[in-house]
Length: 491
Image (cartoon, rainbow, N blue to C red; front, top):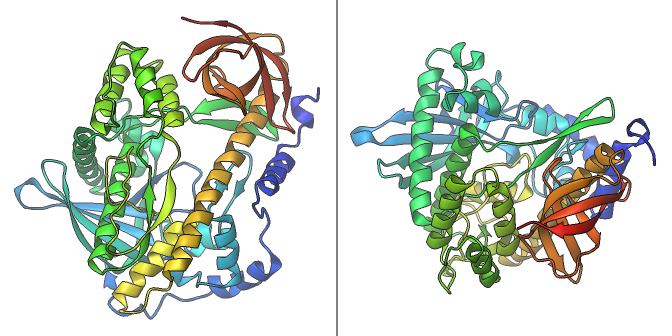
């Protein structure tokens, strides 16, 4: 077995992209357009562009993120209302439909974050440069407005063009620790007058939104997402990403922003693409999982009942809650994109407990969001929708597949990194959770490091959600294999 130093993880990542149908390298035709695009001036501003540069905009993202898609701003209204503005990077200004850059973005459909190498949907001079809402320069943006009421509902507002300036690039972990009382105010917040009060107001709005969605049945899930810590080509560890209050703040703001976008396009009678999670087909499997905890769910799918069950389990056993979450996610099935034509009823998003939802807040990273941005602009400019119904249907299917493919690449690279990390631990025993059991194979996720592998021995009779003890048989970073022998079940 090769040691940690000899495994070429970047080559593995490149090959994984190719394996799942992505183009890991930008074609020369797209790169030839980059210089012309990056030199494009934002002045004179497009018609009806508002000057919002004086507002106290800020972003919250990962420490190493440079492809910033959105910044946020809040202000107090009457009777306890909070007015929210979300500025979304105007990527379409730089990436026009059917250019070579656009075609490559359409093919890949999304940026792919492997933990080893990031394969950006757009060339770095765009996504991490002129079309990113980084602090400093003026940026063109599409602003989404809505009002958060005291009961946690929100009232959709307008969408319009604006010029904005990001005053501070904040980090999830630092802001989250502060909001949760684990640390003091981050230096990046302290250094900007008024930003502390601004983030506190944003958090109040987000907490209202979250509480209301929970009451409506939004699922409180906490799956483990492990990121590889790599230094000079060596895998040092796999670290689980915490879902802290700062991440929840951004999530709640984006859910409301996307709902506002759908309301705006619906009012314009405009076809679009919606983001859905269908009512679970394997509801009986979810009911059986709840029964293991001596809980009874209704025979018919009921998101509120499921949400209450998950809240109770998180409180009762927070340490094991990620295991339960992973089981529920597997049984619910994946999200997908489908066209929404005026007059047709929306399918809805079961997990978020919302009916009207799309993806329109990350155009640097997801192609679907760039499509939505172009449709919004066609409404603002009183022009024909740039996409036909047939195109929206075809793109919905293609981009659903691209998202599934990106998840496969990311999981593959998690296994490759874990295989490197575990290669000197062959024969050791681990506790794990069965995450898949079908004709295609039986899979288990061990707890430390948090990674999934295949059960190649002793898999008979295992079912999803079951806790087991497994022995590591072999690892192969180049094939993404981690093989286990199930040595027993844990009650």
